[in-house]
Image (cartoon, rainbow, N blue to C red; front, side, top):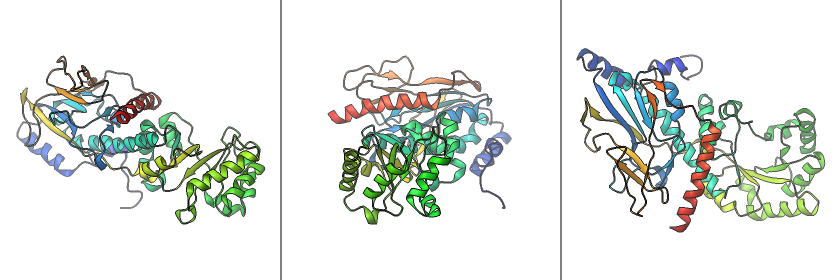
Length: 399
């Protein structure tokens, strides 16, 4: 094949990207007259990667866009919900439920899973990093480590999970935010010096773009920070992308730079750090004078969630493969400790071990292929995630 190795929207919708056995299954069922047998299927997660105890559900909006017009009905926990994969009886908590003829969604299983497995992993890594940063600014800088065809998915997922800004124009358009970024080391190399690059940036780039300068291409960081302040009077911040071989005691370096900025009258100039950061290293630096963090690969290449779709009812009768719990189920969550519960009826009261009545999380989102709710914006979803993160942070601090 020539050209770029990426699928178009039409190719995804037509099933060109699906696992081939789904197409073969459809042909067999069609020949047997069973393709339109009504079934119910649920999407669950057996466990989370890295020993994580909770995840952020992400990707629902794209699934709805895909399935709109399909004729199937669908219910789901809201996008951005913090969930635990199992209840106290080890029953897998359903995140989404599909209902309709198998022919209405069976061939889309590959696409649907891909639209929630990877985004949920990215959103969760973003959320954990935001918490580790103690609510300081976290910027998503990870697109360069992943295929460009999914830059919008990465940025949207990272933003929903808690990142305060994204770096690509596509991500900015999808999230409804202005993309953020400083400059690459290449600018200083091409311009010949920090000062020349800083001044030209200030001359050429629109004034509404924050003046945050990358200072460690050539110079000692302390001297370069002061140089940036002299080059750009409206400087908002400096960014350190110092390689690991030069960092030494990075906390001491950052504190030294902060001291020199302050005693020279630049108390309003912030310090952004980037380069190989992850949840742990961000947490180690969160109690310093650092203003914010640029985090890339650890978020964009977050572990993918191992979600699965399983038929749990056929022609109104409970059924499932071995290892799965049959029958239609409804997800609940305790509002106080975030424990999960599962019921067989949406009206059934489910009590947490802490004594609280759990809240039923599921909402209808598609009825016979028609959306039944207004689309939520990424900003609205992110606000919900941040609120839940602060609650789970308090819960974890008490345990």
